[in-house]
Length: 251
Image 1 (cartoon, helix red, strand yellow):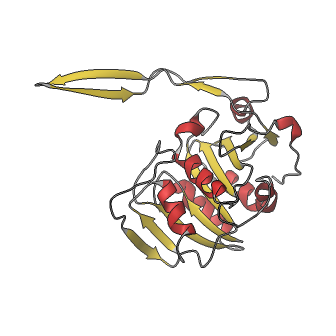
Image 2 (cartoon, helix red, strand yellow):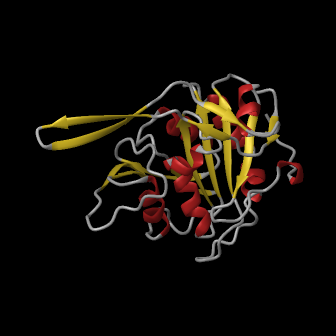
């Protein structure tokens, strides 16, 4: 496959490198990743300024922009040697579960590919061991790709879903579960500070994140040691019910 790899942790991040190592033997890879960490950038597009592209070797680039900028650069230029068959965003350091998808630059990049008719995967791991998730992606590329609803490779022909994959930091997983999306309450704190005549707000992390949802939600599956696979609509449509999904995954 001709695959575009990106992320929101930034060029050279451990999760992206683990994925590159797992996929490089049998696929044609192009890396276009943000020049620095762009976590929480969602679907942000950088406008009204030039974005510097830096080459780090054959088919490896960093771009001074958002994850979505990286996908647009890959799809609208000749950096990938043509329109890629698949875009993979990740492997993110930290979950992108349920409500996280709204804010996630990892998922924003996958969504951008999806709305342009390119199958896309968003991969995330809670922890710092990425090898098992990278291996899972490599072994199941065709199946994961097919879950997007087809490979149109046609501009403006939006696919039904991008595939959001999550797991904990394990050397091996118990299995794979199709999941619904949980709701995540972050308990954020806002600190207001006065400096002379100016007021500043800082949004900081709160207490522990609370995750709620049905018994088949992505948080429960991941925390129990399974790989969670959710099919997420890139637009306002409904996400696909896990009960309607099937696939013979390889671990």
